[in-house]
Length: 105
Image (cartoon, rainbow, N blue to C red; front, side):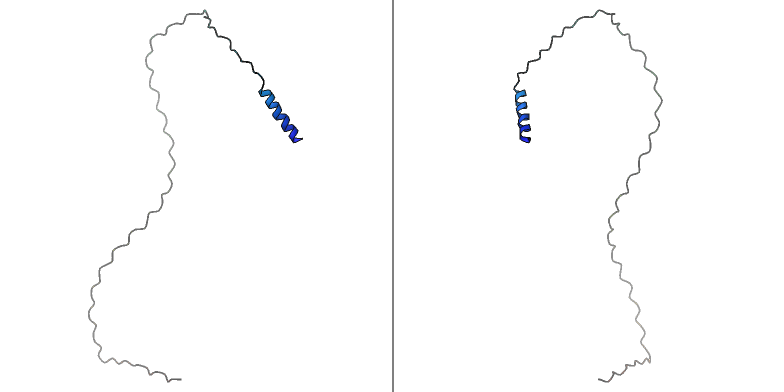
């Protein structure tokens, strides 16, 4: 059934395209003058009109987007060396006690 419908469609397309089509001849256009009133010649231009009022102020624009964060700053310089301290006082009669080591097990 599908093949017969397809075959019929192709055969019909070929048959219709093989027809001799007559050429269409357009009739010639003839300009006919129409009697009517004479066209008056325009006079000189009039004076320029007054200036119109100024327009109103436009609306305020939108605020722009927030910018991107800046980059990290450069590391600072190393500080100066501090002043040297005074020499400490020597001890007088200080005794240092060292505990005895525990007996081996």
